[in-house]
Image (cartoon, rainbow, N blue to C red; front, side, top):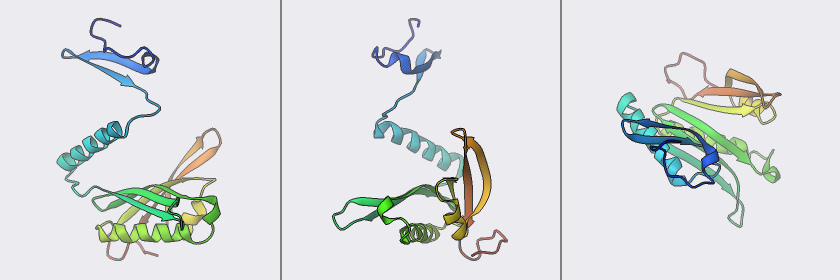
Length: 174
């Protein structure tokens, strides 16, 4: 590494993907197993500002729903984001003790209601073949893509659902 390489701790050096200089400044691509929430938020806020300026998408907002037991412990939840007229569900998880009791349906319904209140007309999410594709199909979600051989043998399903009447999509809503 030359004179313009960044000064990094020796234990970080093996994680560096590449180092390069640009107009007298040095940059490095670094793989981190435990990034700080601050670093993650810098990237998210940066993309949010870009989306607002370049695409006019101003109403980006996290959607977080939790199921808690009587002691306040989290036993399930849904994490997503709304932006423009779109809800993206990143995670829906239930502890094994509460699966099959309607909690997933309640989480999904609540997320869809909140999305409609925020002006959303479409939802998307992904699920593996061993997770819950049948659950989402029963809730009116349709597959719009697949990624096969994930991890060698699994399929990742991409689902969407149009929300409410009058969304302009010319599709029948369930």
